[in-house]
Image (cartoon, rainbow, N blue to C red; front, side, top):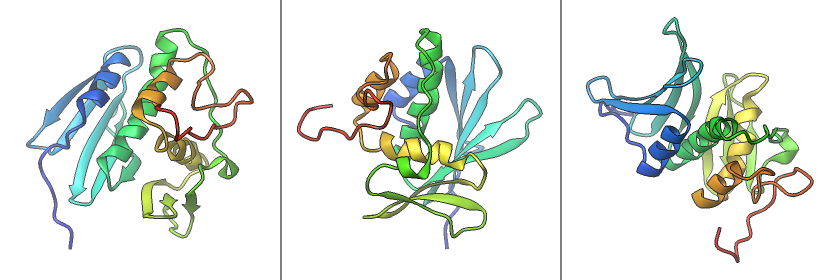
Length: 189
């Protein structure tokens, strides 16, 4: 049986700085067991990171009416942070007037070593072939929009991922054709 954890989940300093660059502030509410990420610019946006059990982290979006929508859940904090780097990276690109980049999100664009498990009627699950489930999103028409890019974000170093979001052509993550590029494991990223 899983235990409920009440301490607020912590995010790395690097992730919090990236969120800050995107105009988000964070607040840890230890009593509620949540870390809040709230936009200080533009449209009101608020996300909660919570750990409902020792083996699960959830990212929840909260709207103006305080209704919550589950965005993603993961077992490992580094997977959640890779997703957050992508989410905040889009805002950072807009802030520095870089063009919007539509990342491919079809099943055929999944990173090598990953697959989508559709056997659960409520969720789409990103699974690493060598280690099992990595992340899950509520089943929807756009669930792959989160999971396919995440499968690629996990293969790159944070430095390379950040460079991609700050590069006009999204290099090194994307090739000249706009498809995902495999990381060069022989070069430091």
